[in-house]
Amino acid sequence: MTDPTVAPYRQLRRPLDDRIVAGVCSGIGRYLGLDPVLIRVAFAGLTVLTWGTALIAYPVMWFLMPEEPGPAVPPWRDPADPAWGRPPTYPPATEPAAAPTSTPPAP
Image 1 (cartoon, rainbow, N blue to C red):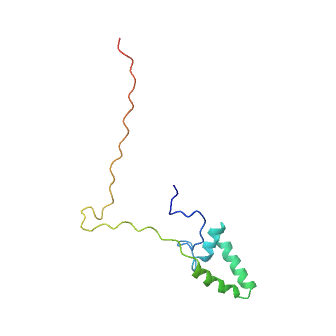
Image 2 (image 1 turned 30 degrees about the vertical axis):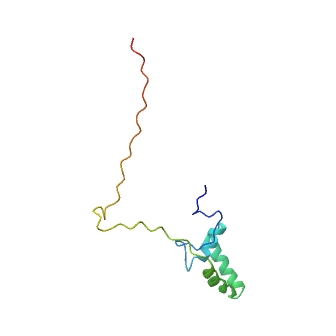
Image 3 (image 1 turned 135 degrees about the horizontal axis):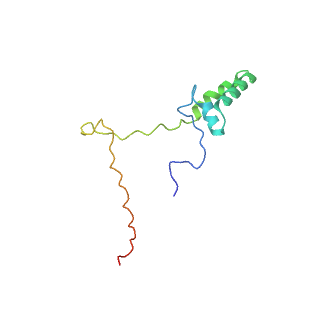
């Protein structure tokens, strides 16, 4: 059975953690498996070579590339709960029972 939350292919998304303006270059770098700095330098070079026309592509990509989903929200706990504000406790782990040892029969 496959996990439905994992896509079977790579997705082009803007990350939440490694961004300078909107995360477009970082997302492209992650998608291609390259350092985002190389993508930023290539984009700056392309902007110079096209006399600034390439700057139109950045806001377009910013609009078209979806953001990666944020971290999961922890479940809400009721403040009336007496254990509210304390870290969750887990039941102690039980150790497996020792395997019986075979003893020689008594004579």
